[in-house]
Image (cartoon, rainbow, N blue to C red; front, side, top):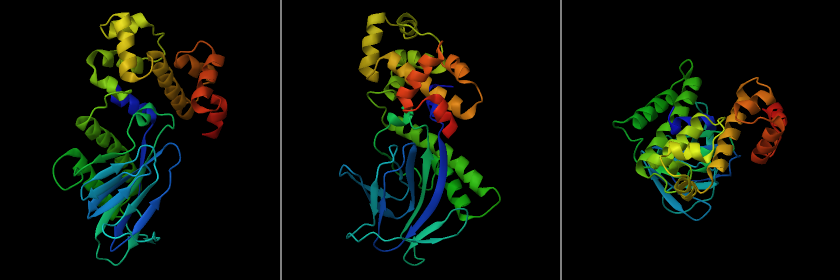
Length: 301
């Protein structure tokens, strides 16, 4: 796997297409802050709307636009034109997902809405901006993202056997295509994702992601990056914003979270799997990352 594949796997991203909005006339919808580990998304199939973010930013979404809020930020969605008070839509059981309707059947805005669920301490999601707005990619036309949205729309319209499972699987794939579109348009200049854009630092980053249990030292990482020790450390901290050891610990903790959730390995085995000789040392680091001891968290999930 390459670095992005590994980061997505560590984040344990799962998608859910929750509802379809079909609105007419003036309307306002308020979306509260999502729980940690949830990121809402909106796909505008037809029409347009406005989105207001907590920091005062205002976005204008048009047909074909896809909006992702990685931090689950609260936001207000409005119809174009004059402001109107928030009103609860009528919910109809139709097709594979419920339809939220305002006004009559003459639809002015048609939108698919869902959420991504992820490891709440995900490095990948922490590295993303407050919002990702990918313009025009869901409009009819060529390209994998447009094709995937067409599949989502078709399955949402119908009620075929297995539609719910297929929608969730397609929604999970949607995240990867959205991330790819974001990275193709503007690779971050700093942070964990910025390491991907540096050929030499990217090799060291890939090595840590591939084998986080290895007892890495400066010599080994600098050799992977084809740099001197001093040059590597300066460059890594400048680009990533943290030391290699801080980033390595985060990789190990994300890997441990996945093992706690999806395996029956003992805590001592998980500790060894992510590079700790001592279960006590592992548990201390894990509690610093997640706020709870690994055994307690495992019982909760």
